[in-house]
Image 1 (cartoon, rainbow, N blue to C red):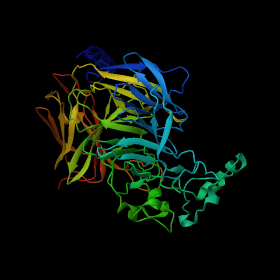
Image 2: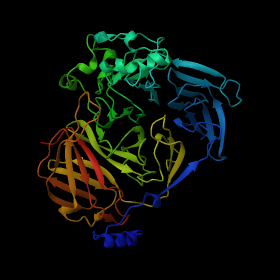
Image 3: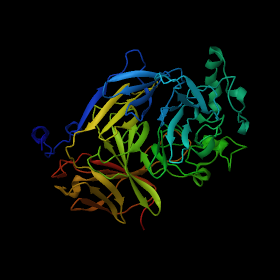
Image 4: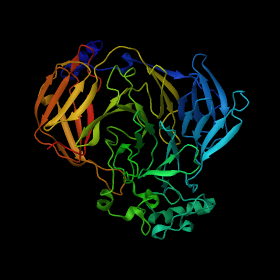
Length: 512
């Protein structure tokens, strides 16, 4: 392979077996998109209009269009409050979700700039807490919009004037949380001791909302999210939502949203339309009790190793990923220089599956917040942000060059281990000693994140390849564990060396 000589020399110097190194840049062209000089280049949303122009919303409230052929930006709207999702409609209107509302932008006189800002929906609470982000924006085939509301943080309190009713379940009144000046803000340090790390005291924080066409009212579609910075509606109208590690979220995760479901973060149970918590602080409810009503996420991305702060997901299109399976997802990542691919597997009727790093290269950079394909699906635009946390700024354009490479299409649980299906027949699979599988339990509890509980190295009894399928047999499998599967980089094919050697499989279910 192209880089085998360099890898071999390094191996000889280090006394290690010779293994080829995979370079993503051999297969993808990564370019920067020029942005206007007078704008805060943090991207909250990306979409494409009927003319093939990119429509982007920016951190400081602008909406701009980008003519890709002329490499030219033009201002469409401004004055929005931290927009974090955008949808370009037929006919030229643009819908944006900002902190306080979903807004439809109209250009009524045809001069290229919005002159009428229509409130589509503002039916949720705003307390003034800094962490109350409003994420979106997705639309299903029936015209329903979906957004997700971030919870408030006990890193700060709330304002005296709020929108929506205050929920004082458990005796936590509005007065206990509010501040109006610097002195009161400083006193928050003593107040926060009795406050859950993330809270949801105004409607409908920590919930996924559905807004039907022509309806100004929002419907609580699901509960139990914490910082849901990524929504995607697939071709089957299934809604997927990402969430970030924190309290009640042992690892970043990708949810497959169930209508009416509770997805794990306790705070939003104050607003569950069918079974609300009315007499307690949700975070004080025993995890075992909450777990009985919880819908588990198909994909866990353990902190640091796999994910850190995941963002928007979309389909991993075959035109972009060298012909791989079309039902897989690709997910943005804020704090590391990679994207992640999610490979679904259905076991006993439950969707779970594996995650690997796609496009793991420093050239991508961090801050990967929003994803948008070109019309031919061969290029992926990546909008970046940091929002005062780790991240970056600007837009990257990543284009598949058409040169094939070896990558997994599927990772399936078997009765005895895992079958990994690649997009080409594989060779040089090595010996059992070249493989490592560790597994552990990600805890569900009120604490922040989770260690690798019950960590163990799993015994591998057999490894074999038949065509493009690599089968790994373990001495035992257990439900409720994350399996960290590490393959040797010596695996190769006629296409290329292996692109990704590490896979994290979330095994809620196993085959008996």
